[in-house]
Structure formats: structure tokens, C-alpha cells
Image 1 (cartoon, chains in turn cyan, brown):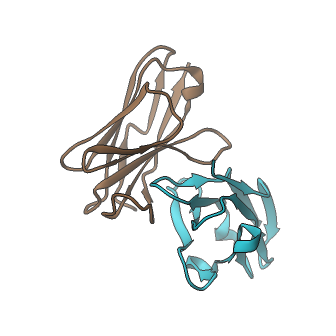
Image 2 (spheres, each protein chain N blue to C red):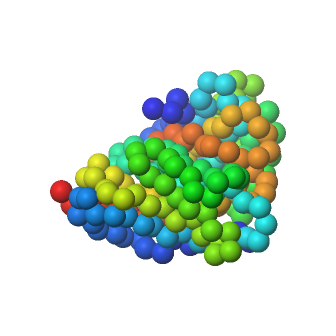
Image 3 (cartoon, each protein chain N blue to C red):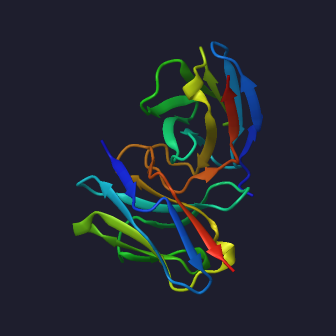
Length: 112
Length: 115
């Protein structure tokens, strides 16, 4: 069965610090990869996605993620976080069929 | 705003009761998926409906059932509620695709508490 592992459940950073959230998945074939974000009091929304092509994908609000097939990883990065990035971040994988498999989420708190 | 609306937003039930949750999909989307998000966990896929037919199901028992209507809105029904059914239930709609899952547009969820 597919599974997604997010390395940290809670991350606390100061503004302007760099961010990297780890995500690993277990599936050996072709995958579609996603990062979703949930800001406080809001619905889940797509941050970025990878289907094929350039393994470095850019999303909204300055976020980017790199797909490393050999490591089964899709880590999320941002060079300089802002207080408004405080949210919960979910990595998700779609390998086949029609469902997304989500990780447990990482709660990011940015101190101003 | 995604255009996906869910009702009710909060509800409390007791063990053994039945519940119906409702979802209106975003305009133009004919595929609706339901997810269960327990506290501290990521969303787990329950099932998906495409053109009024179930189009995939996760590891949930048959007491979780659903419907999709001609206007693409959807219902999630849970019978014989158990304490572990307490969770946030998320509805997500997507572009006409039927099979491959691309971007999902989520509603704000229905928070169910089972006492």
C-alpha cells in the first residue's frame, strides 16, 4: 500500500529563516506529488504539484519542492519564511487510481 | 474560497446513530471525493464519485456510503456510528477527469463528534 511520511510534526522558525519540510513516499512506479497547505481557519488548498518534467517545481507564495526519484522524496522549501506562512502542511501522493494518500502533516509556526 | 460548500459545519451524535453530510461541488466539477481527517492525522480517502457512480473506495467499512446527484452534489452517510468516527469530514471536487486525480478543491469540512 502507498504511504507518505512527513519527518516533522511540529516546526518552529523565526521570520526570515529558511524552511525545508521532508516528505517521503513508498511506491516504486510513476507518481503525482502534491503539497497542500491549511492556514488557520481555512480550507486545504494546493501549494504546488509535480506530475512530470522538471523535478524542481515552484508553487505559490515563494514555495518550491524538489522531486528526487531515487530517494522517493518530495521536500518542500522556502528560502525565507514569513509570519503568514504559519499553517499546517500536507504532502500527498497519487500513484494510481483516483485517491490521494496524505502524510500526517507538519504544523509550522513562524515567530515574528 | 473554493466554491465547495459543506453542511453542517459541526454536529454531535451518539454511538449507534446515523449521520448524513452534504457537499456542493465547485461549478464545472463532476467528480467528488470524501476524506476523513482524524485529529493529528492527514486526510484519509473514503471514496470518490464520478457521474453519480462510486469510482474508487478506500479502506472504510460498508457503513460508510455515499451518493452523487445529477447536479454533482454529494452526500456521505455513516450508519451505526462509533466513537472512532469522530473526525473532520472533507469533501473535495475536481475537474472533469473521472480517473486520474489532479488538483482537489476542498471544502471547509464537517466536524463530527460521536459521544
